[in-house]
Amino acid sequence: MPPPARWFIKTAFVFLVIALGFGAALAVRTGAPAGFWRPAVVHLFVVGWLTQLIFGVAYWLFPRHSRERPYGPTGLAWAAYGLLNLGLALRAVAEPGLSLWAWDGWRALLTASAVMQTLGVLAFAVYLWPRIKTR
Amino acid sequence: MHPLSRLICRTAVVYLAAGAVLGGCLLTAKALATFPSLWRLRPLHVEWLAVGWMTQLAMGVAFWIFPRRGSASREGRMRAAFVLLNVGLALVTLGTLASWNALVTAGRLAEMSAAPAFVSAVGPRVRAIGTHGKAPKSLRKG
Image (cartoon, rainbow over all chains, first blue to last red; front, side, top):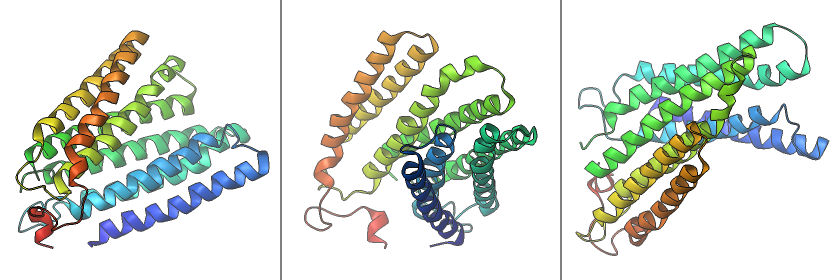
């Protein structure tokens, strides 16, 4: 399994543990996940775990890019990995922060998180496109 | 990869990109406390990513990689599933944009109809490799 696939998949495992742990902790503490935590926790699960696992498996399993470069432009996949995870981590802090503590900086951080996550996903979509082929 | 799988997976990637861009816009609107009307489109963000991306990619990969049952690929049923799913997605999208519930309902019914078509196309292929026919080339190569 090539390195980007391993990193995507292992990071997905980390997000799985964090998201489910966070969800359980909030449920135990408040009876139900508090509203301002909910979107962040849902995205840790759906983006951090599910989407990232799909990215890792797709990188590993989809038809090779070419004989010379089996995995194609790996820099684009690494950029997707970095942007997606940095954006997600930033969101996990900034989204609840916006509701909990009065500080204007949260708005800038949350905007940066939105841009990074979007660019990360787009980078992976562009990376994967040529590998969706009939050999 | 089977040409139909390629079509399905590429369509899924288009929904991934669209869903991510819409999600980015929603999160930015939340961060900057602007364009509150944009939140009307939140159901589309969920629809495009859960059905258009994840479900559709899973269908495309399953049709590509599951063990083949002899020469019968049941391509017609898979094609029907693809058409129904994407007509459904289009109707749900239009219905949400136009705030027209009847269209959303019609879209959901089309999506629902895609499920049995998909299951009948791929279901018989869920079995141990070597019990019938040949495994796809990708698996035979190891």
